[in-house]
Image 1: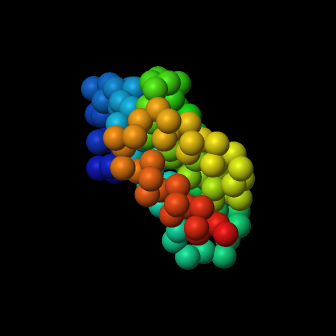
Image 2: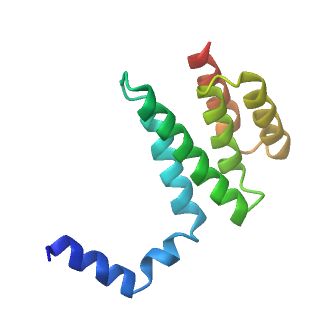
Length: 118
């Protein structure tokens, strides 16, 4: 048994993993990491698709726990834009923008992601 295995067992026993899976902020951060991975140079289309799906899964998990989380909705819009679903991405961004104008990402991210895809 390696040191890493024993540490992960301790974490499971302390129930830290289960607490994290319900922490919207942490889940959102993981989704953001997968979204950022889409902009690392790669020619592996399979990896790219996996990153897209992982990012979407984390953003959706946040929305299941907190349906009003605009950061997760905005992240979904970003992934849709990366996937080339521009109309759907614009719809999501418009809904987020209508829901809250105080969130600076609703103005910056949509333009950035839509620009990168066109």
